[in-house]
Length: 298
Image (tube, rainbow, N blue to C red):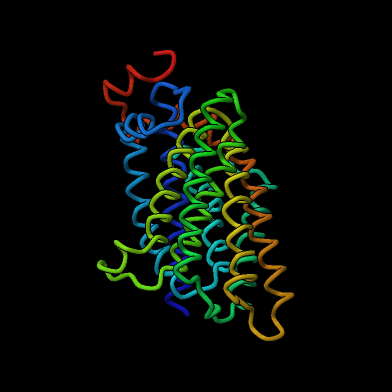
Protein backbone atom coordinates (compact mmCIF):
# COMPACT_ATOMS: atom_id res chain seq x y z
CA UNK A 1 0.00 0.00 0.00
CA UNK A 2 2.95 2.35 0.66
CA UNK A 3 3.92 2.59 -3.00
CA UNK A 4 0.29 3.13 -3.99
CA UNK A 5 -0.05 6.04 -1.56
CA UNK A 6 3.22 7.45 -2.91
CA UNK A 7 1.80 7.21 -6.43
CA UNK A 8 -1.32 9.15 -5.40
CA UNK A 9 0.85 11.84 -3.80
CA UNK A 10 3.04 12.03 -6.91
CA UNK A 11 -0.10 12.48 -9.02
CA UNK A 12 -1.22 15.27 -6.70
CA UNK A 13 2.14 17.00 -7.08
CA UNK A 14 2.04 16.82 -10.88
CA UNK A 15 -1.58 17.97 -11.10
CA UNK A 16 -1.00 20.87 -8.71
CA UNK A 17 1.89 22.34 -10.66
CA UNK A 18 0.13 21.64 -13.96
CA UNK A 19 -2.93 23.67 -12.90
CA UNK A 20 -0.85 26.83 -12.43
CA UNK A 21 0.87 26.41 -15.78
CA UNK A 22 -2.40 25.64 -17.57
CA UNK A 23 -4.10 28.69 -16.05
CA UNK A 24 -1.25 30.81 -17.42
CA UNK A 25 -1.41 29.21 -20.85
CA UNK A 26 -5.20 29.32 -21.18
CA UNK A 27 -5.23 33.06 -20.56
CA UNK A 28 -2.63 33.67 -23.26
CA UNK A 29 -4.84 32.63 -26.16
CA UNK A 30 -7.98 34.20 -27.52
CA UNK A 31 -11.06 33.45 -25.44
CA UNK A 32 -13.45 30.99 -27.05
CA UNK A 33 -17.22 31.22 -26.80
CA UNK A 34 -17.48 27.56 -27.82
CA UNK A 35 -16.38 24.54 -25.83
CA UNK A 36 -15.11 22.20 -28.52
CA UNK A 37 -11.87 20.48 -29.64
CA UNK A 38 -10.67 23.66 -31.38
CA UNK A 39 -10.18 25.23 -27.96
CA UNK A 40 -7.80 22.42 -27.00
CA UNK A 41 -5.85 22.93 -30.22
CA UNK A 42 -5.35 26.61 -29.42
CA UNK A 43 -4.39 26.25 -25.77
CA UNK A 44 -2.01 23.39 -26.54
CA UNK A 45 -0.13 25.85 -28.75
CA UNK A 46 0.76 27.83 -25.61
CA UNK A 47 4.01 26.65 -24.03
CA UNK A 48 2.89 26.86 -20.37
CA UNK A 49 -0.29 24.94 -21.14
CA UNK A 50 1.68 22.34 -23.10
CA UNK A 51 4.15 21.82 -20.25
CA UNK A 52 1.27 21.60 -17.80
CA UNK A 53 -0.41 19.00 -19.99
CA UNK A 54 2.80 16.96 -20.00
CA UNK A 55 2.79 17.06 -16.20
CA UNK A 56 -0.87 15.98 -16.28
CA UNK A 57 0.17 12.98 -18.35
CA UNK A 58 2.83 12.00 -15.82
CA UNK A 59 0.34 12.53 -13.00
CA UNK A 60 -2.18 10.35 -14.83
CA UNK A 61 0.27 7.45 -14.88
CA UNK A 62 0.72 7.73 -11.11
CA UNK A 63 -3.04 8.13 -10.70
CA UNK A 64 -3.69 4.91 -12.61
CA UNK A 65 -1.29 3.00 -10.35
CA UNK A 66 -3.08 4.29 -7.26
CA UNK A 67 -6.56 3.61 -8.67
CA UNK A 68 -5.71 -0.02 -9.36
CA UNK A 69 -4.78 -0.76 -5.75
CA UNK A 70 -6.43 1.80 -3.44
CA UNK A 71 -10.05 2.67 -2.74
CA UNK A 72 -11.67 5.35 -4.87
CA UNK A 73 -12.49 7.16 -1.61
CA UNK A 74 -8.79 7.39 -0.77
CA UNK A 75 -7.41 8.15 -4.23
CA UNK A 76 -9.86 10.92 -5.07
CA UNK A 77 -9.24 12.67 -1.75
CA UNK A 78 -5.47 12.33 -2.00
CA UNK A 79 -5.26 13.50 -5.60
CA UNK A 80 -7.51 16.48 -4.93
CA UNK A 81 -5.04 17.78 -2.37
CA UNK A 82 -3.19 19.04 -5.45
CA UNK A 83 -4.74 22.43 -4.63
CA UNK A 84 -2.22 22.69 -1.79
CA UNK A 85 0.52 22.09 -4.36
CA UNK A 86 -1.05 24.72 -6.61
CA UNK A 87 -0.84 27.29 -3.80
CA UNK A 88 2.84 26.56 -3.18
CA UNK A 89 3.61 26.54 -6.92
CA UNK A 90 1.94 29.96 -7.23
CA UNK A 91 4.31 31.31 -4.58
CA UNK A 92 7.39 29.88 -6.29
CA UNK A 93 6.48 30.52 -9.94
CA UNK A 94 4.20 33.55 -9.76
CA UNK A 95 5.64 35.32 -6.69
CA UNK A 96 2.20 35.26 -5.08
CA UNK A 97 1.72 35.66 -1.32
CA UNK A 98 -0.06 33.25 0.99
CA UNK A 99 -2.24 34.75 3.67
CA UNK A 100 -2.79 33.20 7.08
CA UNK A 101 -6.05 31.51 6.05
CA UNK A 102 -4.27 29.92 3.09
CA UNK A 103 -1.56 28.49 5.34
CA UNK A 104 -4.25 27.11 7.65
CA UNK A 105 -5.94 25.50 4.65
CA UNK A 106 -2.65 23.87 3.58
CA UNK A 107 -2.23 22.54 7.13
CA UNK A 108 -5.77 21.14 7.04
CA UNK A 109 -5.07 19.39 3.75
CA UNK A 110 -1.87 17.80 5.03
CA UNK A 111 -3.40 16.75 8.35
CA UNK A 112 -6.44 15.33 6.59
CA UNK A 113 -4.11 13.46 4.25
CA UNK A 114 -2.33 11.82 7.20
CA UNK A 115 -5.63 10.78 8.80
CA UNK A 116 -6.89 9.38 5.52
CA UNK A 117 -3.75 7.32 5.00
CA UNK A 118 -4.05 5.91 8.54
CA UNK A 119 -7.69 4.93 7.99
CA UNK A 120 -7.36 3.51 4.48
CA UNK A 121 -8.33 -0.17 4.25
CA UNK A 122 -8.27 -2.70 1.43
CA UNK A 123 -10.19 -1.91 -1.71
CA UNK A 124 -13.45 -3.73 -2.33
CA UNK A 125 -13.34 -6.85 -4.45
CA UNK A 126 -16.58 -6.16 -6.24
CA UNK A 127 -16.49 -4.86 -9.79
CA UNK A 128 -18.78 -4.13 -12.72
CA UNK A 129 -19.84 -6.95 -15.01
CA UNK A 130 -19.88 -6.41 -18.78
CA UNK A 131 -23.42 -5.07 -18.75
CA UNK A 132 -22.61 -2.55 -16.03
CA UNK A 133 -19.50 -1.42 -17.91
CA UNK A 134 -21.63 -0.82 -21.02
CA UNK A 135 -23.92 1.20 -18.78
CA UNK A 136 -20.91 3.21 -17.62
CA UNK A 137 -19.98 3.89 -21.27
CA UNK A 138 -23.50 5.10 -22.02
CA UNK A 139 -23.45 7.28 -18.89
CA UNK A 140 -20.08 8.80 -19.84
CA UNK A 141 -21.25 9.56 -23.39
CA UNK A 142 -24.53 11.04 -22.15
CA UNK A 143 -22.74 13.19 -19.58
CA UNK A 144 -20.23 14.44 -22.17
CA UNK A 145 -22.99 15.23 -24.68
CA UNK A 146 -25.12 16.99 -22.07
CA UNK A 147 -22.14 19.03 -20.91
CA UNK A 148 -21.36 20.14 -24.47
CA UNK A 149 -24.98 21.18 -25.04
CA UNK A 150 -25.15 23.13 -21.76
CA UNK A 151 -21.86 24.95 -22.39
CA UNK A 152 -22.61 25.88 -25.99
CA UNK A 153 -26.29 26.76 -25.65
CA UNK A 154 -25.79 28.79 -22.47
CA UNK A 155 -22.57 30.51 -23.52
CA UNK A 156 -22.48 32.86 -20.55
CA UNK A 157 -22.72 30.02 -18.05
CA UNK A 158 -20.68 30.57 -14.88
CA UNK A 159 -17.18 29.01 -14.90
CA UNK A 160 -18.16 27.08 -11.77
CA UNK A 161 -20.67 25.14 -13.86
CA UNK A 162 -17.95 24.24 -16.36
CA UNK A 163 -15.69 23.26 -13.48
CA UNK A 164 -18.39 21.02 -12.00
CA UNK A 165 -18.98 19.37 -15.37
CA UNK A 166 -15.25 18.74 -15.72
CA UNK A 167 -15.21 17.30 -12.20
CA UNK A 168 -18.08 14.90 -12.92
CA UNK A 169 -16.33 13.74 -16.08
CA UNK A 170 -13.01 13.20 -14.31
CA UNK A 171 -14.89 11.34 -11.59
CA UNK A 172 -16.41 9.11 -14.27
CA UNK A 173 -12.88 8.50 -15.57
CA UNK A 174 -11.76 7.38 -12.10
CA UNK A 175 -14.66 4.93 -11.84
CA UNK A 176 -13.97 3.55 -15.32
CA UNK A 177 -10.30 2.93 -14.58
CA UNK A 178 -11.19 1.21 -11.33
CA UNK A 179 -13.61 -1.27 -12.93
CA UNK A 180 -11.53 -2.21 -16.01
CA UNK A 181 -10.78 -5.90 -15.36
CA UNK A 182 -7.54 -6.06 -17.35
CA UNK A 183 -5.02 -3.57 -18.74
CA UNK A 184 -3.85 -5.99 -21.43
CA UNK A 185 -4.09 -4.23 -24.79
CA UNK A 186 -6.18 -6.93 -26.48
CA UNK A 187 -8.69 -6.70 -23.61
CA UNK A 188 -8.75 -2.90 -23.47
CA UNK A 189 -9.76 -2.47 -27.12
CA UNK A 190 -12.94 -4.46 -26.51
CA UNK A 191 -13.80 -3.20 -23.03
CA UNK A 192 -16.55 -0.53 -22.87
CA UNK A 193 -15.10 0.89 -19.64
CA UNK A 194 -11.89 1.79 -21.49
CA UNK A 195 -13.88 3.86 -23.99
CA UNK A 196 -15.81 5.44 -21.13
CA UNK A 197 -12.47 6.46 -19.61
CA UNK A 198 -11.30 8.03 -22.89
CA UNK A 199 -14.54 9.95 -23.46
CA UNK A 200 -14.69 11.21 -19.88
CA UNK A 201 -11.02 12.25 -19.65
CA UNK A 202 -10.81 14.06 -23.01
CA UNK A 203 -14.12 15.88 -22.53
CA UNK A 204 -13.31 16.71 -18.92
CA UNK A 205 -9.96 18.14 -19.95
CA UNK A 206 -11.67 20.26 -22.62
CA UNK A 207 -14.12 21.71 -20.08
CA UNK A 208 -11.36 22.35 -17.58
CA UNK A 209 -9.44 24.36 -20.20
CA UNK A 210 -12.56 26.31 -21.07
CA UNK A 211 -13.32 27.09 -17.43
CA UNK A 212 -9.75 28.29 -16.79
CA UNK A 213 -9.98 30.57 -19.79
CA UNK A 214 -13.42 32.01 -19.13
CA UNK A 215 -13.23 33.16 -15.57
CA UNK A 216 -12.57 32.62 -11.91
CA UNK A 217 -10.04 29.98 -10.99
CA UNK A 218 -11.64 30.04 -7.53
CA UNK A 219 -15.05 28.89 -8.74
CA UNK A 220 -13.57 26.45 -11.23
CA UNK A 221 -11.31 24.61 -8.81
CA UNK A 222 -13.88 24.44 -6.02
CA UNK A 223 -16.52 22.96 -8.32
CA UNK A 224 -13.98 20.59 -9.87
CA UNK A 225 -12.96 19.19 -6.48
CA UNK A 226 -16.55 18.62 -5.37
CA UNK A 227 -17.57 16.97 -8.62
CA UNK A 228 -14.48 14.79 -8.93
CA UNK A 229 -14.43 13.62 -5.32
CA UNK A 230 -17.94 12.94 -4.12
CA UNK A 231 -19.44 10.74 -6.86
CA UNK A 232 -16.51 8.27 -7.19
CA UNK A 233 -16.26 8.01 -3.40
CA UNK A 234 -19.96 7.15 -3.13
CA UNK A 235 -19.73 4.65 -5.99
CA UNK A 236 -16.73 3.01 -4.34
CA UNK A 237 -18.44 2.71 -0.97
CA UNK A 238 -21.86 1.64 -2.27
CA UNK A 239 -21.15 -0.41 -5.39
CA UNK A 240 -17.55 -1.62 -5.12
CA UNK A 241 -17.29 -2.55 -1.46
CA UNK A 242 -14.57 -0.08 -0.41
CA UNK A 243 -14.03 0.08 3.36
CA UNK A 244 -11.83 1.69 5.98
CA UNK A 245 -9.65 -0.19 8.46
CA UNK A 246 -11.67 -1.76 11.26
CA UNK A 247 -12.47 0.90 13.86
CA UNK A 248 -10.88 3.69 11.78
CA UNK A 249 -13.97 4.78 9.82
CA UNK A 250 -14.55 7.98 11.87
CA UNK A 251 -10.88 8.88 11.39
CA UNK A 252 -11.23 8.34 7.66
CA UNK A 253 -14.33 10.52 7.47
CA UNK A 254 -12.58 13.26 9.45
CA UNK A 255 -9.54 13.03 7.17
CA UNK A 256 -11.70 13.16 4.06
CA UNK A 257 -13.58 16.22 5.31
CA UNK A 258 -10.35 18.00 6.27
CA UNK A 259 -8.57 17.18 3.00
CA UNK A 260 -11.43 18.16 0.72
CA UNK A 261 -12.53 21.08 2.92
CA UNK A 262 -8.99 22.43 3.00
CA UNK A 263 -8.76 22.02 -0.77
CA UNK A 264 -12.00 23.93 -1.24
CA UNK A 265 -10.76 26.70 1.05
CA UNK A 266 -7.58 26.87 -1.00
CA UNK A 267 -9.62 27.34 -4.15
CA UNK A 268 -10.10 30.94 -2.96
CA UNK A 269 -6.38 31.29 -3.43
CA UNK A 270 -7.03 30.85 -7.14
CA UNK A 271 -8.12 34.46 -7.43
CA UNK A 272 -4.56 35.49 -6.54
CA UNK A 273 -3.14 32.96 -8.98
CA UNK A 274 -5.45 34.32 -11.66
CA UNK A 275 -4.45 37.90 -10.97
CA UNK A 276 -0.73 37.25 -10.93
CA UNK A 277 -0.29 34.60 -13.60
CA UNK A 278 -0.12 36.79 -16.68
CA UNK A 279 2.31 39.25 -15.12
CA UNK A 280 4.79 36.97 -13.34
CA UNK A 281 5.05 33.88 -15.52
CA UNK A 282 6.67 35.43 -18.57
CA UNK A 283 10.17 35.21 -17.08
CA UNK A 284 9.72 31.42 -16.83
CA UNK A 285 7.77 30.91 -20.07
CA UNK A 286 8.32 33.86 -22.46
CA UNK A 287 5.48 34.45 -24.85
CA UNK A 288 5.86 33.35 -28.43
CA UNK A 289 4.75 35.65 -31.22
CA UNK A 290 1.63 33.54 -31.78
CA UNK A 291 0.68 33.73 -28.11
CA UNK A 292 1.16 37.47 -28.03
CA UNK A 293 -1.05 37.86 -31.07
CA UNK A 294 -3.79 35.65 -29.63
CA UNK A 295 -3.80 37.08 -26.09
CA UNK A 296 -6.96 39.11 -25.42
CA UNK A 297 -6.31 42.80 -25.82
CA UNK A 298 -3.12 42.24 -27.82
